[in-house]
Length: 285
Image 1: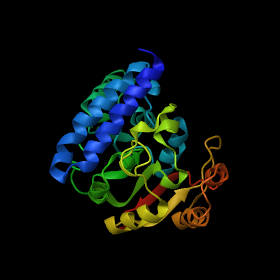
Image 2: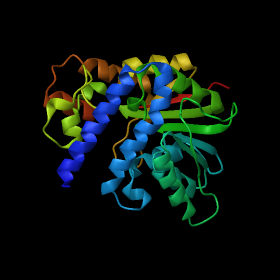
Image 3: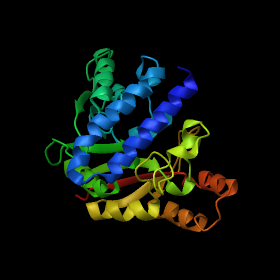
Image 4: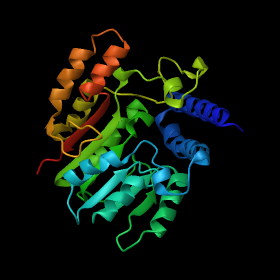
């Protein structure tokens, strides 16, 4: 099978699974998430190497400075939707006590294999569990984070997802969420590098169930109980970057959303650092 046909097969699979999840009721979705993302990881891992850094799936080294800014050595940290464990492993190497959870048993098996080769004590603990059903007590973690996960959830499940993160955070703890901005308007074809527009489902522009904007997500975070919403003004090539009130990016998004979609609007969104949504919320003390 050629690389292109494998990519097209993955696109077809993700689009069909997204359609099924979008159409399912709450109880059915709860049963579908695990098997659906097992299938996606099985096909996605075929072209990847055996190391954790070969299996990043949306995460990357440029996220590590954010995580070390938001936590200290010895902190209890939870990654919700850890995939094959790349970020959790890197954070554990810096002295954090890390737990990673994912709904996919395929991804967790890979993460556990990587943890077995951890060079010293303090390897992350990886658990196969849905982010909608976190099994941890109240006030368990100093930092909870979720990278490239929200877009894979049904819109109706997101408030519950955020409430779970809030519940397991300790007072004063922080939650960091990162997800694509819908206004960037990246299609499935662009994302997968193929030219085939037969995979759209309804008005959803790609295989994601729901992409968000700052204007949509910030109120949900506040409804979940988070306060002092902020966002890092980060360029991947620069390790020092400020954390500003999230409303600064909200205002930039509002100014840009009325431009007709062009490459210029997309470029301006990247320059304003609103191409992705990146928000930090604090649990009040």
